[in-house]
Amino acid sequence: MPRVKNGDRSQQVITPTNTNVIETNALTKRYGAIVAVDSLSLKVPKGGVFGLLGPNGSGKTTTMGMLLGLVKPSGGAFSLLGHEGASPDVLRRIGAIVETPSFYPYMSGRDNLRFFQGISGKGSPKELDDLLKRVDLLPRANSKFSTYSLGMKQRLGIAYALLGDPELVFLDEPTNGLDPAGVAEVRGFISELGSGGRTVILSSHILHEVEIVCESLAILVKGHLIAQGRVQDLLRNREAIRLKTTNDVMAAQVLAGQTWIGEVAADGGGMVAKASLSRAWEVSKLLADAHIYIHEMMPVKVSLEEYFLEVTGDGNSAAAPEVRT
Image (tube, rainbow, N blue to C red; front, top):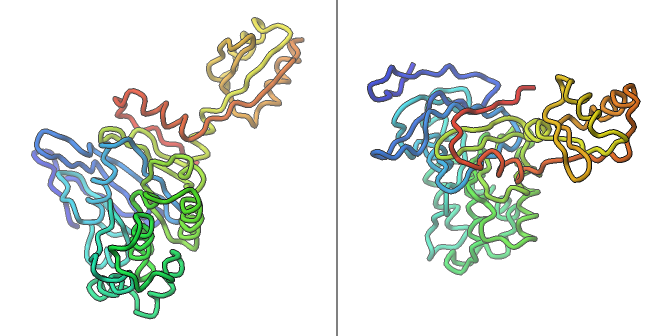
């Protein structure tokens, strides 16, 4: 089994599984004294859209570069599509756009795709018009790439990533340069790509879009993995219930005594109890049994943006909480 040396430390190996399309074990990349990715242990489940998030300089692009064989790891190991490492055979089953797509400016969009298809050997010439149509570039397929807007260049990059109908697709900021209508269109397109067993790795700074299209995600900060899991489960752990009762002091005591209720804190003339919204009825029953009655009860939901800002606040966390289902 291939191994990747990790400096003076013991060599790292990984045993691929069929349930995850990507697994990493202590994957690390150093540039001199700078650690771009630090002991990354990541699991990406098969199928759907997986978000890779993090502030600028968090290691997202470096991680994708290592997985695609573009950047040599300094340590650790990884598997793709059930095989260890980024072998040529595995890479033929993967499509990607990383950072700004690069095409020949003097060639048309169609000719660029035809050229790179010839180099990669992915798919057949018959699929080019279908791909151009899917990304809404067919009317400009014969125009020179140099005449394309930034949004059109991004869409051509997505078409390139889909050559040969890959099982795994990496999209690095695919909505850069798009107007709101274009962002919405690409968002729906990405959701479709994640169906039928294909897996899409989406790196994006537009957290609202990620929350809509991604089933699972991972968050990196300064090369560290600080959170990973299903989006709905990560956000559910931050849910809370805002209350006003006939006796807030006693109500806080009753709720604080329950192991399934987290922090209870005063808030604007009432209180906020950290608890799953699905258990709001139990909160009501507990208080009623204690002869405390509710004047107001409101759900407190956390958006992905709020969650992201919370967990990346100081940028110093190295532990990676994982939600299992």
